[in-house]
Length: 103
Image (cartoon, rainbow, N blue to C red; front, side):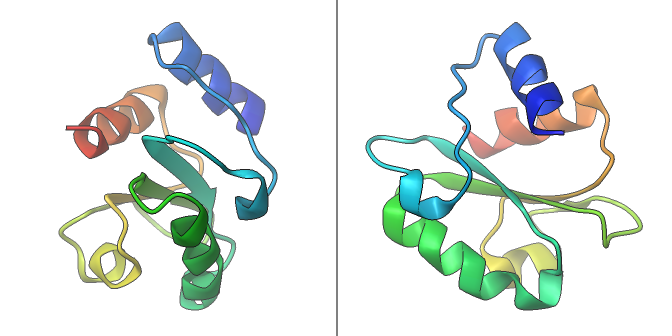
């Protein structure tokens, strides 16, 4: 999934640098896409990402969702996400979320 997302973003003109965990993130990062295995436990994981990249917009991906949620949804707002996308998502859905988060 990581390779596919990287391919979609690169082909759309974004510069992509994959990282396995938040501790590896450093520098001026505009956006972080985070795998959220369990949305109920995501706050701890997202805390580490925010500590490493405080200015970055965050998009979550989760296989636990029936459908994707916009940033205005209660679940996304609670986690501080610009979007919470259901896996699998379409290329168009991901690129739309990324463009929205980077505005």
